[in-house]
Length: 400
Image (cartoon, rainbow, N blue to C red; front, top):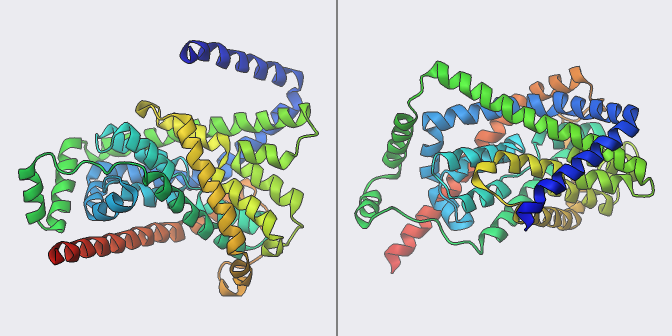
């Protein structure tokens, strides 16, 4: 019944949206320009290199090699195959829909099931560090230190929500046969990683030129989809604000779109230039909204994951859990975050930023080497944790 009524519901909503745009064309046009500026100055330049790199490394077999090395950690903690480790690092350092794109790649390659794709996409659905450091921290709160504090809480809350969701899931299947499992145990982890990379590269078989072209095409298609969602949701927020002005603008924006919601929260409830000196409740609400990420970002991820048939409600429940954890952690760590002064970050502490097209792209490329280093650091930390888990399991097995 729900599937039969879905086309009529979506068609009715489209007609209502078209009527609302026609009734107020000027405000809708300005809102669409705001969404376009947001996409072009922030989302496109921040995600383009990371998504291209992920596509090419996945085809080259590098992701599969990293997956073998991360297998002990991801199986034990998140109950996902080892290849999910690369996607986790990608989502944490590139932002959505990078994690969903990585999960969709693994699903197409047969590395994960449809349910695992949904859990992995929920686990890796993080806001971009560029958003938190440049847009929210430096531009909105006028405090790079605030951006780093929110980023740390955002990552911790996301991992906590992922562990909570994974606690009820079954572990992924091991090797296909006892003989294969025994051979895998006898083979060193490094050799298994090299073998996995070689097998994945042989299965792909594309030349470098073809791989580069198809990576660019797939990345641009994904980002154009994200841009369309951002623009249409900017228009929807403008229409809702015009029809129901009594609704809190910050609540409506935060529910629907992350960047516009963060802008409304910081401009509406926090005094200018306050940074971390804003009250704990205001900062916790902002952190919770970032964890929720907005319906716009959630639909972007689900659109990328359409082949896997991921359902919205479980995905939204994971976002709600992420936002709740972020709200609580911000309240708990408010005093340590306040003590984290800008003097501890002399390179990044600086003047207020006004995000224009030129300054936004320049700021992102200024941060790009730091983001790449952050990505490599996240991979190194995950690899060390995986090695520790493997060592602990080996010691436990010998003691029995």
